[in-house]
Image (tube, rainbow, N blue to C red; front, side):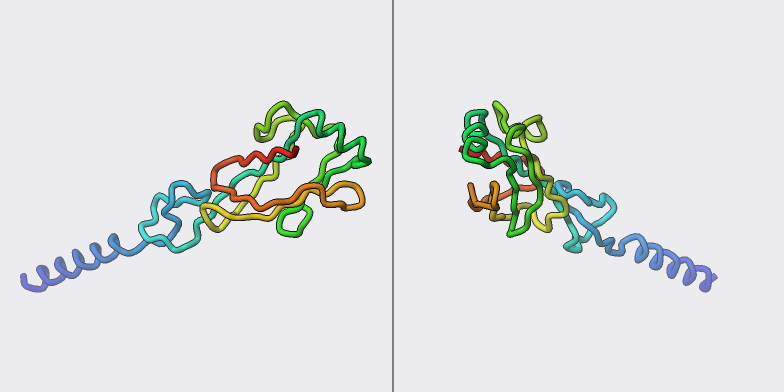
Length: 145
C-alpha cells in the first residue's frame, strides 16, 4: 500500500512540474507573433507599422516642373521604394490609398523605432529628409510640402 501512495505522489509531482513549466514565447498581445500559450516572454516579439509619404497635387506639379520625374524613398540610407512623380499626389495621407507611397515595415524588434528618411528626386538630389518615430501598429503619414 505504501508503494502505491509513493507512486501516486511521484506521479502528482511530475504532472505538476510538467504543467507548470515555463513556456517561452512572445507575451505582448500587440506584437505580430503573440503566443497565447507562452507564459514567459523570451524577447522574440516583433512588430509592424507603415510609413506613408504623400503630397498635395500642387506639390507634385512643382516637383515635376523642377525636373523630378521619379521620387525615391530612402530609410536609414537604403532606397526602399520609388514612385513616378506624375502619380504621386493625394488629398489626404491615408495609408495605402491611391497617390501615396506606403512602405510597410515588418519585423520591427521594438514597439517603436526611429528612422531617418530621405526623399530623392532625379539625379538622386535630396528633396526632403528628417527623423521620424514609427509606433507599432500605426500608419505614420508624412506630408511633403
